[in-house]
View 1 (spheres, rainbow, N blue to C red):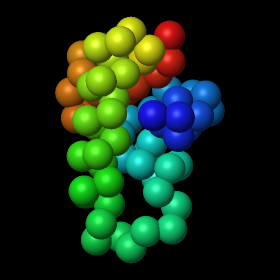
View 2 (view 1 turned 90 degrees about the horizontal axis):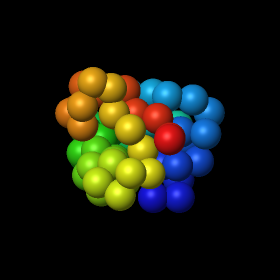
View 3 (view 1 turned 120 degrees about the vertical axis):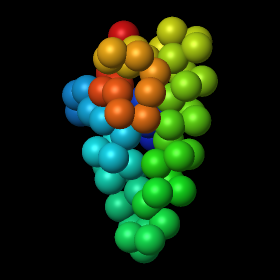
View 4 (view 1 turned 135 degrees about the vertical axis):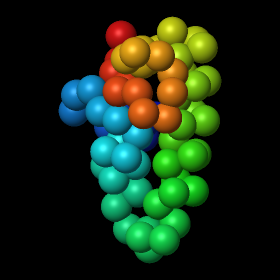
Length: 66
């Protein structure tokens, strides 16, 4: 969560961009799993009103901090 919030401090971003900001040293073939992990955390963060999603919490949304 802390890494996601830190990545969002650089500005709103979709999941692929956030994943690239966080997972800088993993093999390319693992990025889809990393994106799913980031999305799961974003859903939780959104449910606690720590992030927002535009237009809604969806894999294609852009996320930002409140």
